[in-house]
Figure 1 (cartoon, rainbow, N blue to C red):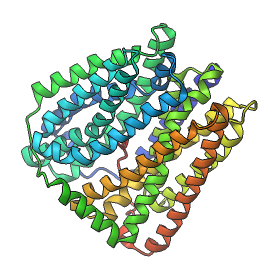
Figure 2: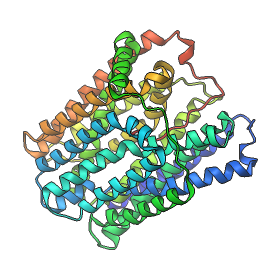
Figure 3: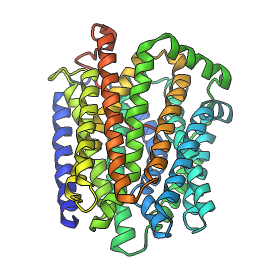
Figure 4: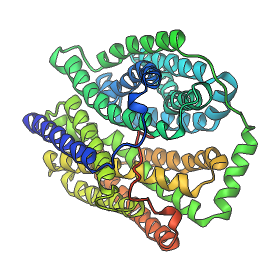
Length: 452
């Protein structure tokens, strides 16, 4: 597994480069002058300078999170509870982040994210279970602030303060999404170097992330101005979202797909380490491979929906769900007690990440077209509740049996969950197949970024 992980990473990086080259050549000629506007480029780079260190700090926790808890000799069930508390904090933060950001200010919310995540990382230096639990809760609260606060600040400054054309906005987020993939890959290799090559242990990537957060705070304080958004009341936001869900079956099906698909992804995030770690897999390199596969999937989405191939987001969504179902079916056989096949499991995990790279931009497009803009925050809050509930219950059920049998059973349960997601996709497709608003124009591409 040691050499396999390195070879796979190199191969996936090469594939990503080829796909990005193909995407660039499939784009229509540029019609805007954003790249030649010095004021716009200066503003864009000021955003990237503060945003990218925060992204890097967030990604550094990924490869060795489970390994850290296991290194502290906690049982599988205790680790699952830590993850579940993080899911619960993510639900609560999703409910309050929008009104909090509106009242506190987007610049201050970005700074708050950095402080919360730094607190999360510093808690990992303790071996006390409740301190670690507190750290995971802080991480859950910070997760919803990362993309919403930074990108909301940029969107407001772009349109209101600098008065740049609206069509230049996707250019910034598209570039940020591409760089985010590269940052995630580099973060995995860096974490692997700290934890394994230098022998500093699984807590070292978290320590390394804290200076990046300090740098992000310093740049935000020095270079950014404060801006505020309109903050609707919490009850009104949730009430509007619930009414939208109940009156439109398409939105309800979309929420079911998101809850089923992403709860399985959350469980995968928990399970990949205990499946691969016993077989001498370099976890940071495996994580970088996952991120490279995800980035390749995102490039594949943009290539497939380009003018050359004319694929539609609904088709891509169906394909991504099928890919994850097939991967989970593979994992039920490759993780059998006494019959573990780590190479097959690793390839199945890579296929899941490739599918995620296809899924998130397709889902983002459909959400924007199906959910009215003023009700999106409330609807997404309701989407997160069953998502985190399913993931949390799944992890708790996993540890009712012994580790190996429980892991295999969990993958079987996830495969069944993905089958339900596939049925929901088919139902949604039957409702919207003749809707021209849900068809992507051949010249349009969607920027994709990680979801909180």
